[in-house]
Length: 173
Image (cartoon, rainbow, N blue to C red; front, side, top):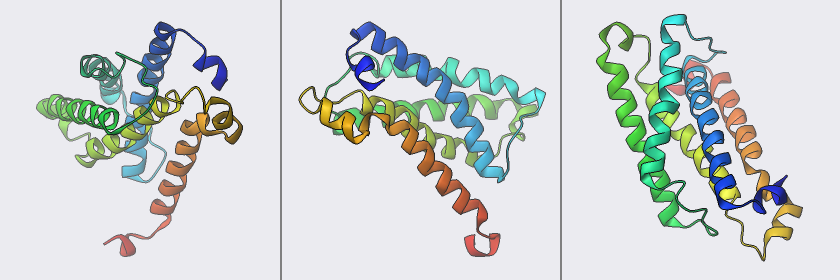
């Protein structure tokens, strides 16, 4: 799978990245709700619009920020800052939009925005990190499984969430 992706032309890589981000954004929002509430979250019907709004708002911000402009071979601090700025800008605009709807503002805990931003940094950053493998290191990276870092990130995040929610509220405070 990793070699197949790395050997695709740039427009295909960009399209795949946009599609992955389009799926990761609502998933990160759902995961933020689940982590915040400490249970498997099923959104009520009046809240479903924010799961549609999230990727519709984020993808243009990510495009304008230059996240998909070039598939960079080496991830460096510039790429990390670009991702961080794009996620922060999206989180800020998204939270302002949701909080301005007085009827629905109480349905979203304020900490969900920060939790989603952290999760989104991992989800948006990891696929870009995995596609930025140097051509000389490509085969050795694939042998070590480094191009499947999104899977390991999900497992690490799930482990952290399980550990955090298994702790009693006495230990947290």
